[in-house]
Image (cartoon, rainbow, N blue to C red; front, side, top):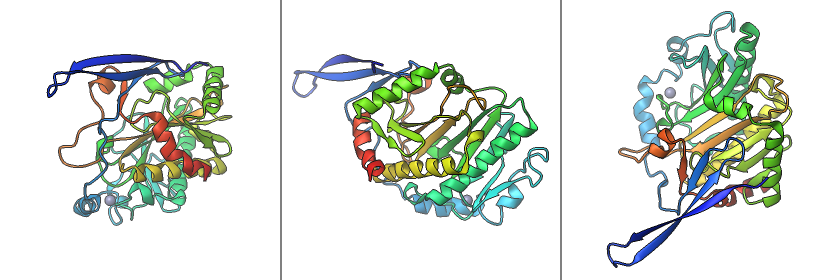
Amino acid sequence: MELRRELLTAEIIEPSTGEPVRTTIEVRFDPLTGHSSRILPERGLMPPSDFDLEAFARESQPHCPFCPGRVDRLTPRLAARIHPDGRIARGEAVLFANLHAYSSHSSVSVYSPRLHYLPLGEITQRLLTDNLATQVAFAKAVMAADPQSRWASINANHMLPSGSSLFHPHLQGIVDSQPTTMQRMLADVPPQRFDAYLDAERRSGERYLGDTGRIQWIVSFAPIAPAELRAFIGGISSPAELDDDLIGELAHGLVLILGAYAEMGFQSFNCAIYGAPPATEGYPLNLRLACRSNLKPFYRSDSTFLERLHWEGAVDLAPESVARQIGERFRG
Ligand SMILES: [Zn+2]
């Protein structure tokens, strides 16, 4: 498989010198879905966090519905046919119904009611394993109760710039009869194209992070969002098929990446684990994870007319440099 890219050249007249200045922009094409993305010269579009997140956490904590003493009273329970307890708990993680539905079955799961403030560098494998496990149990329970809902995804809006309306860190689950656009596009990719993409990345080595056992991790060739990574889990196609070992392996890889994001100065991210219906032949369960702008007043959103309306990624963090910054954690 050829990882396709085109180079564009822009020319301007520099205002201070009157001299022409040329810039190169690289357009890359995603090997799976064909969407294109622009890699820009680094121009500081994603400044590191200098905002006092801890102080903001203290400010928002007194009214937070996910904190101890309120979470039981203020969050909706799951319907009895999904789960008789109305909630799913694993370790400190608690899953409940999303007050604002995005699908037939929408859930929210907190890492822990006590962790209102959870910077990326402090998310541990235990916390992430337990939280993912509540979402896997939710997907299984919904599919057993409502066999029409075969499309499951596990997602994260972490911190307000990523789309989260509540500060308290959490994951979100969707289980539905209708796939999202990206779930549909990925499920339509011929199985051999996933293999060819991973082979090409392994051979090139520039963006391949590693294989943690049953999961392969790479930095996206044509990212939709800054510092975007992907992971591929062969042999299963739905989050409902994740066993305890795979959940632990997934959490391990994600913790390595979130630690690297924290070191790179990022504190907000989105994640999506794109499920196809269980036992979809040849579809590897796969995920995307990317940074978002940092939280602070009057910040610049990383999502512009290009991403929102043209469906075209535009990032100034070269995937190869992201891979160099994160790769060591996978090899170490
Ligand atoms: Zn809270």
